[in-house]
Amino acid sequence: MSRPHHKTISRRRVFYIPGYDPIHPRRYRELYRKEGAAQADISDYEIALRPTPKSEHYGWQVDACIDDTDVHADIEVLVWSDIVRDSMEASIPGTYLQLVRTAWTYIASGALRRLMRLRKGPVIAALYPVGMLLGQALLAMALWYVLWRVGAAFGTIGAWAGLAAGVVACVGLLRWFKSKDGKIFAYYLMHDYTYSAASRGANPPALEKRLRGFQNSIAAALSEEVDEVLIVGHSSGAHLAVSILADLIRGGRVPANGPALAFLSLGQVVPMVSFLPEAHRLRADLQYLSAQDALTWVDVTAPGDGCAFALCDPVSVSGVAPANKRWPLVFSAAFTQTLSPARWKELRWRFFRLHFQYLCAFDRPKDYDYFQITAGPLTLADRYADRPPSKSRIDHAVSKYTSVAA
Image 1 (cartoon, helix red, strand yellow):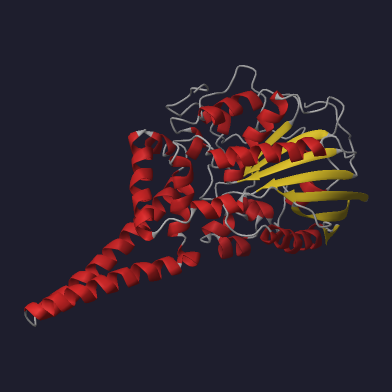
Image 2 (cartoon, rainbow, N blue to C red):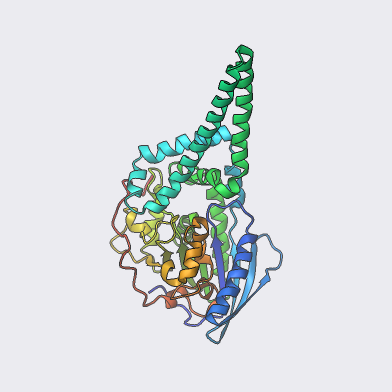
């Protein structure tokens, strides 16, 4: 159990940390509005949203009636999309240089080989942008070659004209592919993996500064008259939340008699970073947080999510589990069971949509309901007090790099 907390709560602060996402956080509000209404209809409860008064932060307020209990939640998105956008400004040649450097980092360090021992899905997702970008380059070069050969059939002048036309066409095709990346996601994913690999697992200075700001926001909420402060880290946001919470507790910023502190990690990709050579800080934070009684940490993934390291205990697989390890509680959202056959058929091959399913409605819900967790009357600790971890979880050390000190 975590430290003492209220059995039934009426007020909650929720901090949502997105993954590597350049889009404005309003998408998360609209997703919550739409999917929350759908889940409320399915599960027979009431939930309503309204805007948060204007401030420097982005969020919304939720009023819900669940299990005949009224609950108010203030939800805030901890925004780092501007940092993401800045990291995505590489030119086409620059992106191909990133491809080479990132692939070399994962291959030469042995991280790629060890990641494949966990789950094939996220490794395939990591290799997808490499294959797609190389395929685009090959098509562009083939087009250049065809135009050059056609021109060469008309003599020297034709060869030079064909060569010039080929260069123009090659560049034009590569630019066209990049303009369609909103559907292909090759550049987006390449930038995503490059962001962590560029520093071999260490946080860039701009991100470290932002994490300190996030920590201050959460510390302030812990001094408010609320019953629970819940941090939700999705995808890459999960490992950011680990470091934020570890620093918060180390710094003595969690009041002994304050609100219950809870951490929900969803669709995490922690090993993509923690397996890298210089991820000393993250590994130290994983080790520290896993033994703390100042919070409750629940980790939810699903084998149906090909972009996450499903049922991989992020602490244990990183090789830093201490003898007194308590967290996280690892279990599956079990998409094939919590979504009807028709709904699963509709979503099965929509990999990026499935990576966000944790934030959405389930038409055959079991014990995982994002909206009851964020706006319901039970703390995270109470909700899963008797929940056993999934038997099929992976909880043995796999990472080659286990050092927790730089």
